[in-house]
Length: 73
Image 1 (cartoon, rainbow, N blue to C red):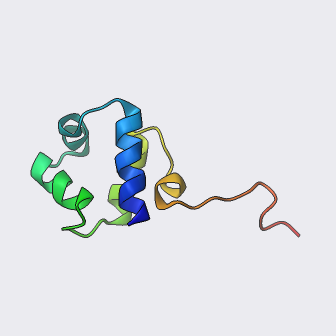
Image 2: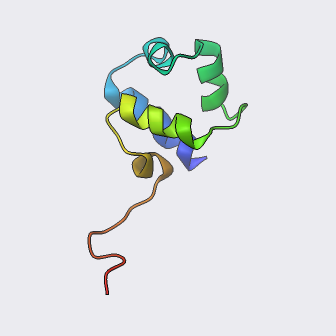
């Protein structure tokens, strides 16, 4: 559910309404509502589109935090 909360926050922070976001995604408002309510499965491609529309990153939406030193030897 963190994903859905993060997406909702990103949409709110973008200043765009849900109708506008749905239009930019090429989906209906009702389908966007089902995605955000957890009624329909959220595919990775949709997360990537939402990230682009909200000036975020997929990692931000998934709640993944990577430090610059992580993964270095």
